[in-house]
Amino acid sequence: MSIPNQSKISAQHVNVWYGAKQAIADVSLDFGQDHVTALIGPSGCGKSTFLRTLNRMNDTIAGAKVEGDITLDGENIYSPDMDVVQLRARVGMVFQKPNPFPKSIFENVAYGPRIHGLAANKPQLAEIVEKSLRRAGLWDEVKDRLTESGTALSGGQQQRLCIARAIAVDPEVILMDEPCSALDPIATAKIEELIHELKGRYAIVIVTHNMQQAARVSQRTAFFHLGTLVEYGATSDIFTNPRQERTKDYITGRYG
Ligand SMILES: Nc1ncnc2c1ncn2[C@@H]1O[C@H](COP(=O)(O)OP(=O)(O)OP(=O)(O)O)[C@@H](O)[C@H]1O
Image 1 (tube, rainbow, N blue to C red):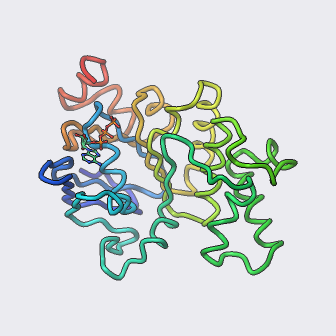
Image 2: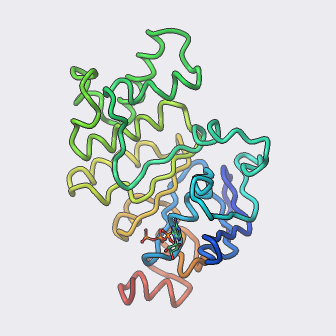
């Protein structure tokens, strides 16, 4: 299902199995550069599984098998020539539970640019760290404590640190798997604000259980059910005028 859009990542006829169990069945979906796409649907419908196909995170799960075509700027990301480390820098990921490295705040952000050779010297590296922390809306809170451990920050700050870490390697796409589910409402509001600010610079795909959040942060919404893509469209249409009964039932809270 696609509506006109300059697509950054395109998934065509994607199927995913865990062993003999099929978790995603024939899903086709394009993601544009300049908007946020929300993946919604009841628990177990395959949102996270599908999200993970977009940067080959399913490769790390024993028994998971992915079929179909997924391209980033037209390039097949499942090609044997694809450098997966490079791919995951281009398609960054933020997880449900903030997972900073047990290292300093500075090192959490500097690690990626260093291993990808993005800075020629220390001042350049410091510049990337500052820019990334500013872009993640965290700089003012941490600029005087860059040597402290990332794990000493609050949950919301840790999540923004993880976003800064993803941004530091100059990604094209950012995948977010329920990034606010472990956060309180104030920290959640900050992440949502941040998503607004990052929109346009990166293609953003967010899995969320929170329909108000999907309505607030996204411009496109895809509704999944039982491993299939039921409906995709402009977020305003999905929430006010869904075409499919199953979408309507879900957004009106009849199941989920
Ligand atoms: N590592 C795994 N091994 C085996 N089965 C899995 C694995 N991960 C997910 N599944 C199964 O695949 C299906 C889709 O799960 P997935 O986590 O993608 O759904 P989801 O929509 O993201 O769910 P939730 O909203 O609860 O996070 C489920 O039936 C789940 O049990």
